[in-house]
Length: 404
Image 1 (cartoon, rainbow, N blue to C red):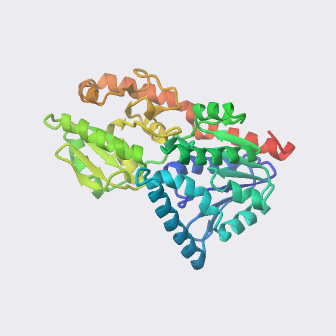
Image 2: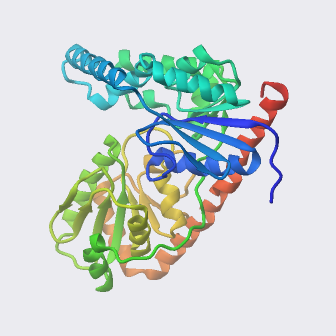
Image 3: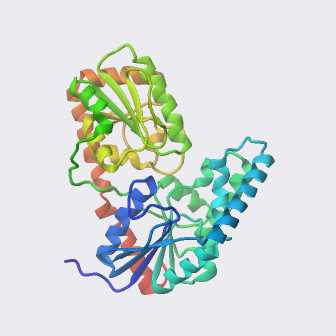
């Protein structure tokens, strides 16, 4: 067994769901926590939710639950915020963008969160702050060293100049308060460097091995049948974020252009679209389980990422490459990774060219194999067991010297 260094680490994570890793951010944080647990004797993870505490080895998951009265005023405050900001921008800025500011405001009116953060921080030697939303609350109740992870610069997804500035200033303020800052994207690292913030670049890590999942999978019966008939399955997986919803519209166009051709079938999975059938060659499954997602990747030869906007680095890219799917993406869909078109996958920003690309892949098994192997070799550098050791080194330096 690996010797664990002395020291206690806390992780503050602003989204519900842990210890499950069925969401984009959790897919990054979950493997990181596993790495930390192998190097430090105690790891505590605080996140909001409704469940109770749970212990997984030397990792303790704590749920921050707001009392009923606090929920009432928080909900009321959000309704006021939503109404005022909707009116101020005359409906031109959608709620997803306006929420990027609300995330910072909400924590300041939640005493239960502030108390939970104080208690967890008091037991830790170093605290990992995932996302900057709780920064002001944390620094109000604790002076323990902080490692802040900027998963994405979320000000990039805000269109309104005034609102973008507010979110950007909150991001910068959180970075300047932290003893160490981590970015998952080289471009984000450069942006912060221009502001005088020396951030560490740690790429998003992904497990390269996993246990096989077994069926049956009633939800996937149609896909199983199409696959059994010899069709090439093209899969897109996405959360409810707007860039993924836009990608769904692009896939509808691509599938429509191939509607009269047999042998190519499109599948959409995730909260980006509900459970719907679009013609004979496209189906959307809605949210799927981890077991169903594993099976979908096993059935799919092609992973689509027709993304035209967004920030940070998309974990779905690594997920596809680890499953040896051929990646067909826009350039922005693989932002931050350094993927080379023709070697690790195919990059194309012109959606009108996708039908031709997919026809060629369907008819050339050797080319599919070559690209899948190229992607697999590329993704070896993103093994979470290796890349997240950088967090361990940063934490150890903070424990030893109080600074990086």
